[in-house]
Length: 268
Image 1 (cartoon, helix red, strand yellow):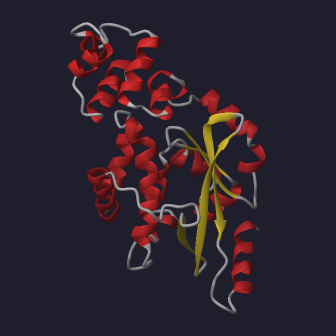
Image 2 (tube, helix red, strand yellow; image 1 turned 30 degrees about the vertical axis):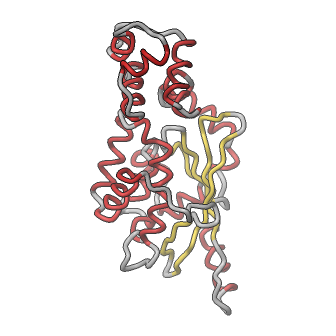
Image 3 (cartoon, rainbow, N blue to C red; image 1 turned 90 degrees about the vertical axis):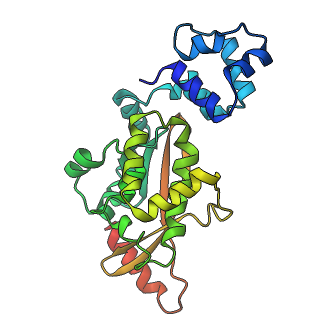
């Protein structure tokens, strides 16, 4: 478990301020921040709020510091979330993934597992609680193949949508083992590694990263499928979100009927 002191140090160094800067600005005694960061003293909630405000931490970062995101959801939390969303992840028609606030996949609908081409047993053994980026880059699954520019002219753009989400939602958790594992998988893919470095180096957030532009492409039974996707937080358990993938109808005349026949094969 990453300590409170380690997190404070991470956020402070990210903000490019010194311990002395914080102590001076907030009227704290010399060495106060050093003792907190080394976990030799425990700050009050009031003090943490002042530090968080000075560092301009957003709600997610503050929640990771002292709130519900402090640790990843445990199996009991996950079971509760899945019970709330049973009709989603048991669906034979909806392409849905459920993930937690540490970017780990907790469930995939029956339809999604069919698209992955994996059984429930393999899903539980190989992909349950694995970081979503690692799953999408897994060479044994259909998504990764479409991140190859030779097969998809929009490969870099499609991959960027995944990496931007991962980076901006999870980079403040980079001390966590889950983050390190995902970065290892990213660096094992040359194209993903190049794009990820660009995001990190220049804080790059592409203008096209809109909900209507977030898409993945896969090959299914000889057909190329475009999947638009969006993320929505579960109302009764905000630590979890579902990602809904929606097949995008073909824009080429004469192919629409064939396209929907192909989509029907996925669901049934």
